[in-house]
Image 1 (spheres, rainbow, N blue to C red):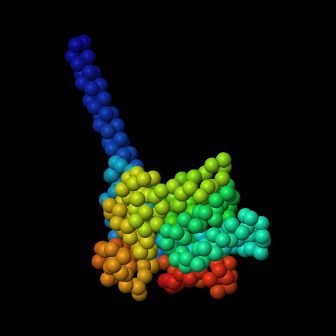
Image 2: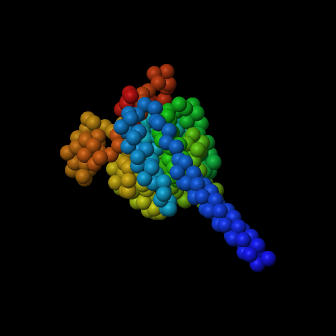
Image 3: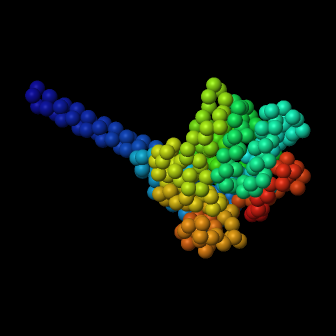
Length: 325
């Protein structure tokens, strides 16, 4: 009886070990599948060299046990900006509809702000960027979101770069948080960017101002996401160093240099040689500088629709350069 029990005991022990081994194998297999199942989908329109470089970098992030963040500029980086910035078109068309030709105090005040912006002429400068917010003060966040969304539907639908949308889809596949950082008013861009890119509107950051009693005020919250301010927004509001940063212009240089991994530059200018005021970019075009720095340089089609008419044109704001693919 003792020998039978011993034999049975050994059989039971061996069976238990086999079950444990099978469980471990299944656990490891399950972990491997969940960890390594990310699939990179090739971005049509970009070369194999660019796709391979992006995919190789993303594969290095698979086992990272930390926040994986990518930050992209808005105008000219994920959505076309030709012939005019959506932020400008939204404001000027609103003014033409609700304020132009009227003599009430509100209309006079808002038109004075736009006339000041036009006179300044530098629609990428900090004063101009701040005045966009001053124009919107007194409106509710929902009203401003709808203003931007309606402008998008009427004049910019179809202007999102399909390559950048596919890139963002790949980043989501690899577990990245994707943020948009724009120098345009935050509420103006949140609704249409969040909808088109499938992002929470809380991950669309722009020029912020204090909301009191349900309406926007003139009190701007620092830092202003323009030039060096874009770089400061990242640790202030995103609170981690991004692994990927994408931009398109000189104004994105400081933000791009915050990247801990890939820098992606869309349609960089290769005509204007930058001056001393541009710091490390002095003596280079935007494209030359980023080629020297080893950034991934990509092309996306951004050309005007000749049938589309813009309110911004009548306000004599400069046009943005076309970038045919």
